[in-house]
Image (cartoon, rainbow over all chains, first blue to last red; front, top):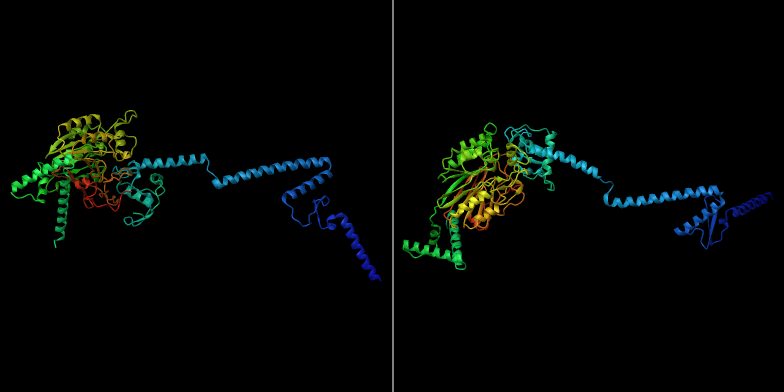
Length: 228
Length: 376
């Protein structure tokens, strides 16, 4: 008897919970063809007739539902809160739009120019500095004194416009030097032999300038290291 | 079966015989050809009469080359670019080597052309040193001036030592003309360059501050007068320091008024120009004019990157580990016809011969062997 009563109480409690719950959460007792969507405050809701509870809404339908939910929620708020929220919401939306536009713009730039681009100032600076070095090399190349020649022989006497210096063919093995020669080794060979001067250190500013000048005269020539 | 050497000779003979006959067959189609035919026929008849036998095809070959003119040879040395001996002995030794080469020629050449650029910077000491070395030459020497001899004092010392910079002379039926082709329009006065600065600018082959070389109006007028006395059939050999055509402006492998000079030479049947300045084997033909370069005794130059005449067979690129490679001197063999074969005596390589036949045939015959190492 006592046991039956206990079961009955439990059943009654369950029924009561169900009834109470059903009033607070209408979705629970929805019939088949009604969809209920709730706002995150747990109170405000919108019902869609003729839609199954688990049906997927299209983007425009979903946007209409959220707008309706927000309108309902705003209607319940005090006017000051509603105004402040509306203002903040609109500003946020505007910023997001600007950001999206900026991003779209960036992407069109990226397609043409990769990750970053050189400014005019960059290019001017490079050209100026490079020209300085090449011009210095040009000067040394044409002056027997600057190359340290002791017999009046300058580089340009045999190599007008650095012709026949073929920097593109180095490195290559030179049996006379008994090793693989770089351009600077042949420059030093010429300084020491035809010009009877003293050879330059590899990082001597004059050597760097000579290499720059010689290379500058062969722009666009394919590299052919090892060619004799 | 003949020995190989004979067979080759025989083939050459047969070829020349064929060539001569094809010319004969064409005679009659043109006015000039008809004249040539008559001349050849007359000569053949004369020859046959004198030898009292019937004219026969191959005997005529001998007759054609018989002329008032006798073949002869002259030699050349060029572009020695001497510094004072204390500064650079190598260039001095190299000129002496060329002089020894020429003096060793047997038979000796009729004369020796010096092709200009005896000095490097036009210094009196350089020119006098050169004059002293050239005095060792046994054969008579004909001097030509180059820009390196001229632009320090505008030729004052050079003229004192060697005489007028342009002149003509006749030798064994050939009219020779030596030009001063390296005049430059005044680029120095406006810029205020000193004589030494002017000299150094002109001495820089790739120095763009200078003007192009030219024979100039005055000298062209002299040339016109000089040529008026010359029969159009007389072979002409012109010496000029710069090539008398436009090859490469940047290095002054160039004569600005080349076309005007060529126009004066065009009426003559056979003209040959021998030029210096380019320090390399160089061959060109413009109509009746054959052009040949001369080797230097100081240093060789790379071939110009553009404008190289198509008949030029390049000499080997210089071996930088051999300081006399690509240098030398040479001879010019003047045939009885008045056309010349140009010999390049390259010091460390096989000599090169660029023949009149090669140029006459526009490169179809007698082509010199090609280099395996062309200029870069």
